[in-house]
Image 1 (cartoon, one colour):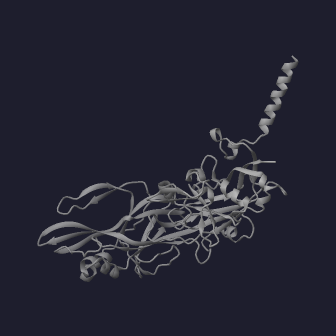
Image 2: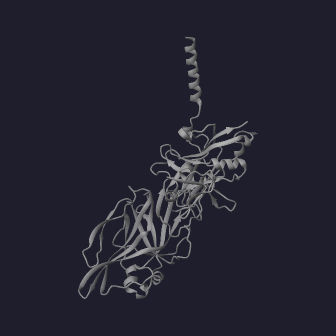
Image 3: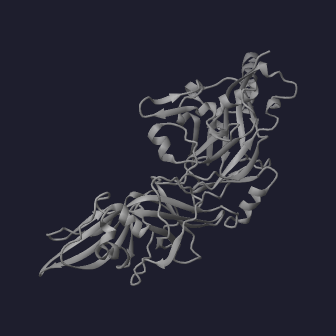
Length: 483
């Protein structure tokens, strides 16, 4: 019986000790085959500052934003589009059909691409179209803060409201014109149909011979068009829709009477040089909410910080006193960092009704203030050599992290190499930046993209350095101390 009592006591003590230990899985560290040994340090002495993002290059983006989004938490964001149009044969001239031409309708088709962010249920929209008062140049690089010169006359069809619901995943039935044959009804990809007046573009196509002698002549005559998204009611939240201009166009539907012979036809004018004009911050912060303005202007660490797409908002993270994180007087040469992981948590309640960004990125600035990848993300890609790691501590973009984990409402970033270099003095502790990123780039080539982008909408509201919150930003470090 003596031995039985001893075994039970030992078991109870063992269970108590094990129950008091931190579980690595609970803090987002690896388990199973990747189990790491060492002590766990939770470092939360992190300074967080919301900051405006860099102005993003916006010439001919693959995904072009069109936005009128009055975010209840961040404020109003507008994104407009400026673009020139091509003749059907681009470089060649356009031959006007013989006979009497009557324009039936002019429809601008804007093809959706993935990335809508906002309200599809209770908000309705209208795309207002104007003529540009300057011509986009194919040899010039445009930025999202450029304010385009626009004529004041509205080019929309006055007889049709053009109001629509955002349906980025719903196909549309459209009558396809068959020259010399019977027109047919077809199901085509989701897009926005904007009725335009019957005079502006047809006037250049059919009634101005000099305008159709070449593509350049047509663009010189028309300059191009400017698209502005409007919420049908100012009380509506609205949203940001992503448009694929490469597959968008303006279509002119017409009838021609040639000596009594009647036929229908369509002239398709593709979009050419395009740029996005984003108005969420430039010149002043008038469009942001009071909470965001306070976070940006604050001289202290943010308890809550804001990240915004369309090259809107990012945040700077710095680690004060990082070299004494293991205690004052500890010789850092005796410390081996086995793993370091940054954990960012969305502020509770801010994920409804608008979900946080699905992917974030993390980067540092060099002495020239240029964006650079951290060691754990340092790899490049080229079409000839593929993915090339530039640091032995890079495993993969997926291992580096940044994806939103909806079950825990968290983002995780691997920063083992970065912390090692900070402690060894190989990198200066000048801070990291966390911001939004174009999801498609990582999926297609497997690199950690750090460039500013307007190709993603949405936002994340996250808990910063609020020490009273269990969701505060933190760095989980597993280390071994060698005596």
